Image 1: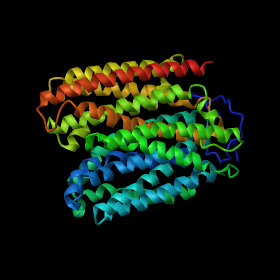
Image 2: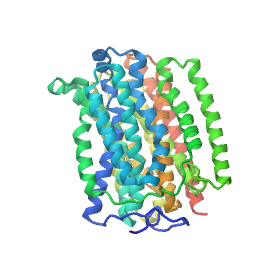
Image 3: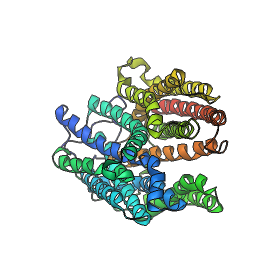
Image 4: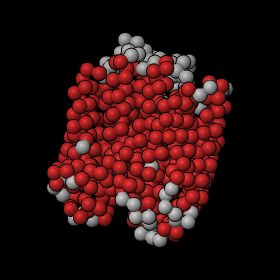
Length: 490
């Protein structure tokens, strides 16, 4: 057994002073590549299901005679459960072993996907969809923890680059694949194929995981923080649920009550964690993780990047399908420059001169802001998507990817090895909240200006306003990235 290697952004340097969870580190060659392929496939599968159901929603509603609220829970319930359980699942991974929790989450996700695909009614599908979200929440935090503990040096840095590319690809590929599967109507399966496609993938992961996943010994001595767990779950649930359902329901009073209650719950959680720490207990999130230099500003920056990325993706898809009349497949393909650019930036930013690596987060995000402005200008009159808009999407994707990889390294650069699970849970929750905020806040801004279907010019104007807003969000992300760099340098 070897302890986790240092956690600096460049793969070296460690400031932690707590004992790390023991793992069997993956070899630097073929073994590490197969391990990375395994766990990132699990991550991709979970990310895919955030958006793959969107394009099947109307077919599900027609086939199962689902009510409007029921359909909203079918689509959004996955995201809510996923976001609420991430930090708790990260802690479970540190206690019982990352590999064990990855396998358990994959098994639950696979079985729930099969159940969703065979669901006889809307009520059954709703319940199985929530179970699917729980499975995703169990497996996803273990991915980053396994990367942090099982890979070392340059292998870890490359792995984090691929990880960022997977996060970007999953959101768009979900929309493309969902449209293709529903349109193909394989064996008369219709919408059911968007769930059943996970079953063979999950089965392969479970078989391969038995031999590829490293042996990880959990730290059983830490007592579970049940009050903290319940308070955090309540706070996240009360925060995410109204954001996901607010626009569709017209922002009734209960959404604002829940948001206010979430603030009170977060405050109660902080007080609870301080008391647990003061009494010598084991808090759900170690305060030293949140105090790690650069983690907080880098996490805020990453959250804002996801707000901009997911918000622009969502509103552009609405414009393309609701105003320009593009099919889901056609609309999805138009986002390829965004995804390819993000992936290339995340994979290859390390090849840029080392002297500018520290500047990449702020510089990249400022370029992204300019790309969003350009996108707004090209689409303001409701014109068809041409080479100028595609170029702007490519610039946004490439510059965001170049910034995102270094931001991840910056956030984790001073986190102790023993705190990998806590940091993983925090970062995954930040990512998920960023996606929820992007869709809800930016989506509400867009839909508040236009009612789809709408004339192309009206929708184009609404899209340009949201694009300029997203540009401002990206510029704010650049500022927090700069603050994170200064914090890490102290």
